[in-house]
Length: 402
Picture 1 (tube, rainbow, N blue to C red):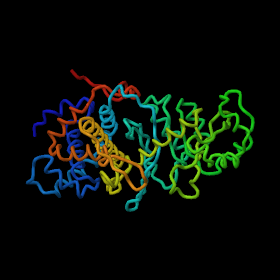
Picture 2 (picture 1 turned 120 degrees about the vertical axis):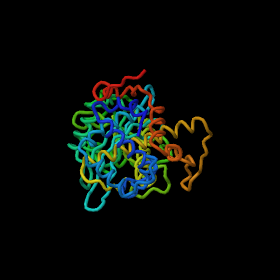
Picture 3 (picture 1 turned 90 degrees about the vertical axis):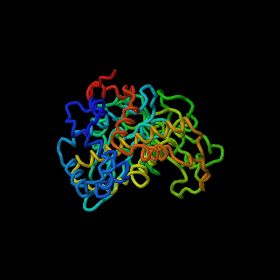
Picture 4 (picture 1 turned 180 degrees about the vertical axis):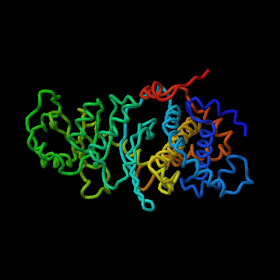
């Protein structure tokens, strides 16, 4: 088959065999159409993508298994990730990072993908991940290694990391501060209470705006946080952990249906304004939407049936590529058309059709063969990476584009 667009996309896959690169994009297109990672279902869409309906689906299953079985194919993952980042606008300012994990068990294999996202135009986009392959939360040492790997590719200094209650640890907080990354991390009730109760004197290196609460103990602050006058403002005091100063914030949960244990929310942050802590942390939920689209609402990640850590990583990379592709297309569509909103039972208003769903439906309907897939992919590429991924341009790929 003649593939006129393959040569244009090949610079993103330096020194990689053209046949292998084409197999990658055939697999991507077939996964998009099948909306699942289970190769037993994906095989039924390969013929349509290739424009060959005479070959039996069983033969295409063998084709897919052989592709994932090649060691060279596993080496395509970093290149595909680099290409994915070129979907994002180069000069769009990114201020937030979101860290979380998604885990599940399939057969006798346990998956635990620790995932770091950037918040891009209100949507979480994965930029780094690692399968920890175990149950339970990640350790501080695992997170430290994970962050070091991400920082080899990205300049994240000055960004604000948002994370839930399991991403805690005194060494972890110190590491984030050392790397120049601000953070807002939700805490479990009573956690670090000792620091709050012991430190009752204002610090010289802090602003005086919270001095009236600086001499308060934990129980007093919690009572204050639930009073009507602090409903929208929260209460806060500075504490020191390992010689570093952080803001400890208590805030009455605005959700009237919150569990008894969650009536008060607790945060630790390297920022120095409680209102900024509350406002910014509300953006963390976007990574839950991302995981939902990668799994039940999009590509059924949990049905993955490839064996081996590197193969699973390649599959996850393919899904991130398709997910980001869908998000970018959805943003383009909503830029040209009116958005329709829907009010839900919790009183909140959301898009009736999500950005991902809008873009994903468009791609499925439009990219029904490999030639069109290549064409739209090339049309979507910006050929200049975002500022915070400048290291990718220097280390990972070389692009010659006229």
